[in-house]
Image 1 (tube, rainbow over the protein chains, first blue to last red):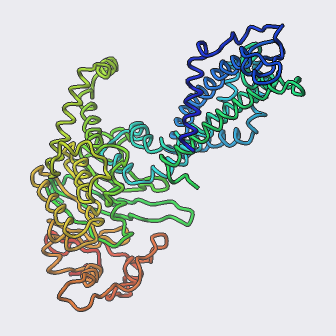
Image 2: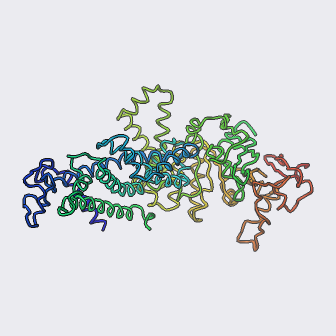
Image 3: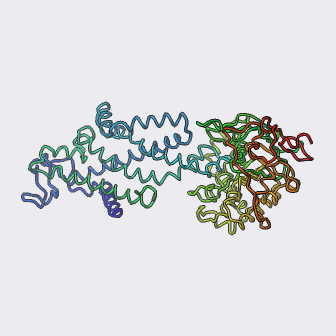
Length: 270
Length: 345
């Protein structure tokens, strides 16, 4: 299963990388004469529009291909940034303990108390739509997941003798934190981060669906599903194919993440 | 205590402030160790052996705190030193090795890196000790400088591995700890501790986790190295046999205090303190039919008995012992006892 997941993810990454040569049409240009063309295998379908066209006559396949760039870009960037932030605060929090830990942990608790989507909607409402604001809105809360994981791991590891042993030969705190402890917590972090990419992709799609994320005409899967919503009776392909794209990518990432978990961190396995 | 003492501990008190009360792990301990000497510290579990020497390195963690006393290393009081001064001192002047070689090495780092890390760290600091900030920055940017340092550190690493007699050391530099046996790991731990040539090595039960044949090898190695590097060795153990083989002097601890200290030979020939005598009765020997365990348990360090802490378990207990704690007095030449039985003699 993990292998299937990885293959799906790799395929989507390739699609995102080679979006321009792969897409048969310009994702932004519509052909109003061809609007709402059904997928090619259906009655009235056009071979040039494999998955049909939307209400403005834009090619759905091309838009999905280009939409993958947004999803993957946002997913990976947000998780990369938040993982770094989370690792840093998690390490510092658990390593120094005391007041520093109390402050960081309370901030984490407060952020965790908000439902993610509601929090992101609120942030977007304040900052206004756009890809950069969208990423910021997700980053504000996302780092707590990694922070929690890292904190828990570090609390356990810093009690082990080799940390005392390192201190006993005069190694600096920063060196102990980043050279001795960090490599020990990386494997659960990798697993968690991978799985979080899927969550972020769904969040991005949700926000775009609500019209708060990526703005038209930029093709994003969430906004495509939203645009197709008003045509769902009769013209199902507008929403279904971008929805399937989200489904396959997220499933692929989750399967891959679970495979990683089994190989990297047998302890996390239920 | 003569002038050649490298480390003098005076009236050290280390308490742990827990929710259940104050645990007096080390309570008024005085001790000295001479240059090049090897001192054995013997006592039951929980008598404060490890805490004493973690205090010396100031590695006591919350909720523990050093609340009193002086720790003089080469005449300087360590308790007054700042954390960064202590960091410079650890490893280069005083080094410590721990009980369990299975957990004393970081499982995710190659052993070569673990040794050279320490060497590199102290080398850099020594070279740039008084350098201005600009020099430090430029040095850390200079690839040649870093390369030279790295090379020196890795040479030193190899040298250390050969010193602790790890076979085919050059190849094993790139192995991870799990690829070593327990005895070999303890050798690596020793190599790390000795890599910066400390003048005092504190060995906290270095052989407890190893089997007997390996124990002997490690102890022999420690003796060897001690003579080669002319350092002082403090050996914390609960095994009298090891002390007898390895140490010049011995100190027996009970409930956070030294109850008796003397030359190894004197102590074995003529143990004075009732606790020392009782401990010796506990040593299982092939010739003896029966061991005599000491009745009772180590007293709770939160709620120490009044007077002498050993009196509830002592065979020679007198009325006086229950009221008044004895002090550490000189009994013979080079021999000190904390017991009322010997105070008047």
